[in-house]
Length: 235
Image: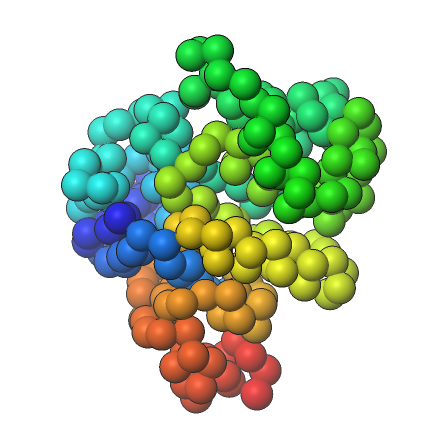
């Protein structure tokens, strides 16, 4: 479904990604793990069109994305729940969710079913649907960010650090929902520093260090890899 081929991205003279190659197949959850500054967020932002490609290519369902603007990528089915959540504070929970329907709502389709599915997945959001986004807890804002991405009716969901800044129990709760989303058939690429949580829901994973893929494999194999265990699992 999604492939990055020899992808290189730079900020001026600083190269952030060096010839990265990853593949995400339809229906699977892939974890991209690594330390802070490894280039994980840069990769997601480049896939969603927020960074320019210096060389290489991104292919989504046989189409090159390298020169396609971000708004067209959303219409193609790429949804991004960014690091830091980026909730619109002056809008209610329901307004934040409804805003993401813009790519398909021009056909005057009802959003009721989509809202219902998000509220079934995140009951807390239903309880707080009239509250302003800024008034939610950190965990609830993360749920809202994921729900908002789902409202765009994506074919692939990009999740950037969904556990960031959350207490352990809240992070586990968010990942329980990520697992349900994947089990329902959604294709997911998740960037995460919390390797334990990411590999628990993933089918496969890649380890990124200083902008390069240094390891890849099945999630169960990465959990047992001595290099991963020492560097990222604290074992």
